[in-house]
Length: 391
Image (cartoon, rainbow, N blue to C red; front, side, top):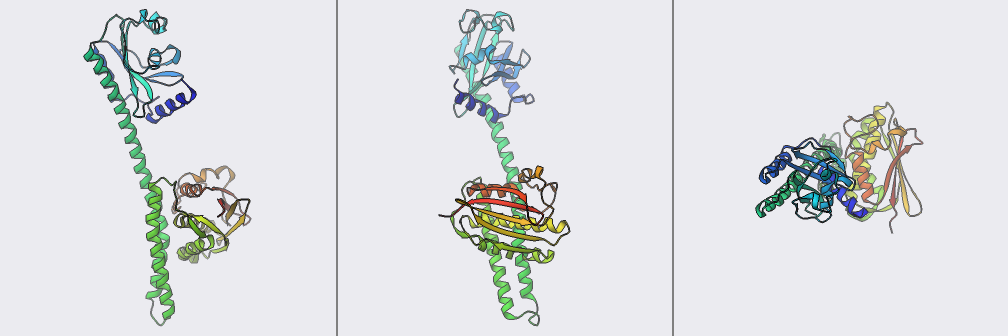
């Protein structure tokens, strides 16, 4: 087996999560069926990588692990296909095997059918054996092949069910994240409409028109964000849209949506980032909305008047964008862990972390960049982002 084949087989085996797993009744039922149909006392489902043979279900023997050098099924798997050996002691491939010589067992009759994944990767066998010389009829040979196919079907069903469950969990989690991001433009909409609804004695007509226009713009951004973020989640975050953007304009829309929170906390946001990027406007807006909102939130919670400074400076072929705050900062040991979903330092259960740092990282990486956390000259955290410069 080549190194590539070994790695491919290990990856396929890992996807089924059967090694060291609790006994599964469905697999145990199939191995007992194989023994009963064949009229032998012993049958085993083996999973085989490049080092060991794992018996994940067995009848007639205790399920164990053995070295690849001692495995009869590893020999059979070199040429995948049904193998029937009436007397292993007379077969040069198996005569000196410890399962045959008496060191481990006294196998005479041996038969196996390979477990082949839908991708064509052999990962193990269903094997039956006996201490007496015997053979299998054509019907029983066909039956053993059918059971092998059924075992793979069970493994595939388990794998796809697990992936569906994980996908549903991720979708539920992502929906919760999006719901927070929508609160910012929604709050802005409500605030602007409230201004417009005030009595004419308090609010002049131009102010009403401006408030309604800003409410309409925030509502439009909210609608776009729903569609774009769901599309981003659906494709796994790998293919953002590409168009020319001015970063300062993106941040202007973000601070407009965050106006109620900025006003409530007395936060100030300064921007020195009049640069052009190529990227997805919705995703980059969600990114900076999350970073600014978190900086304000954690600064306010720490008892300071939040200050956020955003800068962009050119490097060789990239932009280095920083979002600095005067909040509590993030300890060095926790800076990488922050990018785990819904975490920031010890505030793991803190509400309102928006799309989550993990999705922030996905957005940046989807744009060909990197993101990290350092110390801010303001005394808090500095989130730095490296993005390619526009052509």
